[in-house]
Image 1 (spheres, one colour):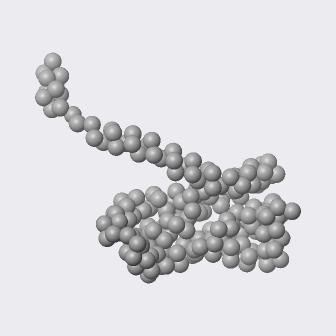
Image 2 (spheres, helix red, strand yellow; image 1 turned 30 degrees about the vertical axis):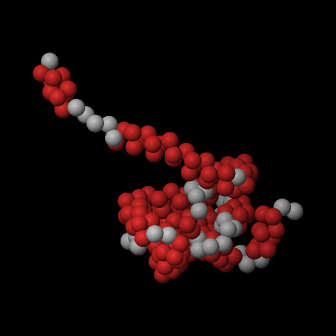
Image 3 (tube, helix red, strand yellow; image 1 turned 135 degrees about the vertical axis):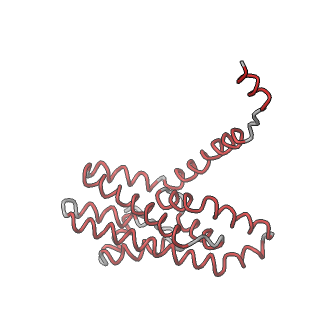
Length: 207
């Protein structure tokens, strides 16, 4: 029996309540993704649309609710802890990044393998506004879990096998996503730093 089967069997007796508990706590600190509970439940309810919708709402709303706790932890203690081991300039950079990229970052983390909980902590540390934080989390989490439900409903066991492979390699995929942004960042930085010579443009216009 794999570690995934052990987790599923342990929580199976609690039904949707276990899904809510795992989803809620995963968005705060614990490492078990709610998909491990959610996917088998979807597989058992194929064709029962109201139950699928109920599971989708349960996993989405409990995950976003947990992220709010993570946000509060980051806001309440994150800056104090980081200030003991880092300079004020680093705290200022976190706040600046949160203001500039917070909504997009939360959406990507909520939808992708990148740890959602970490972005919740950082959003709290950077004192990101709660409304965009909640909206980005709802959209990202809702899209992720909704897509899983649709894929399983349409493709059945083939989708379940694919999603399980995704979960088995989630850490690797997250690293690939993070590393792939590096060349994109440098490309954008190069593009942004290109200076246009006004004299050259004037001469071309006159021609």
